[in-house]
Image (tube, rainbow, N blue to C red; front, side, top):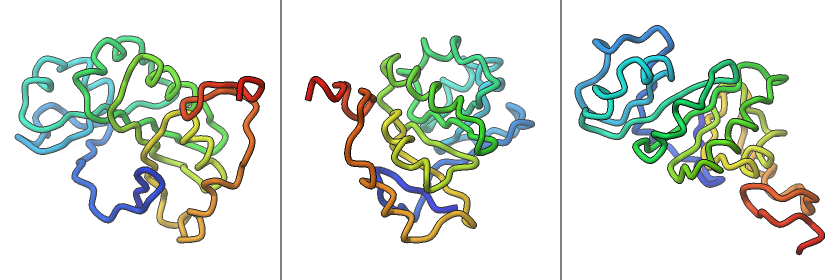
Length: 162
């Protein structure tokens, strides 16, 4: 899967993602790892004590309120978009950024070209695009929209304040 970070294709990803059925016993001893929110909430202290950077992944069905207090301990937050019509991840990204998270905010799942610019406006700085939905011309999606009426993570000022 192509990974875009700050609007550029990155060839190497150091993060290992654990699936939703993963257990604490399957956790690698060290290295950068992203765990499901449920696993994080269940084994928070053990996960924070391990070597390597830690990330958490959740989707629109998850209640993220308990996670917001720990954002300063995380290096990556991954928001899953399970299907195109599910836009709850946009709102969750805004909540995470407004809570002060400054690490990598990554969109995973059904990430498509027509959403790239909106994902960045909501605070995502990394997009994991399915292989079948990516081609080099997809990078042209950035900058296609020249005027925004509402403020967002990339520019908080609404158009009448610019």
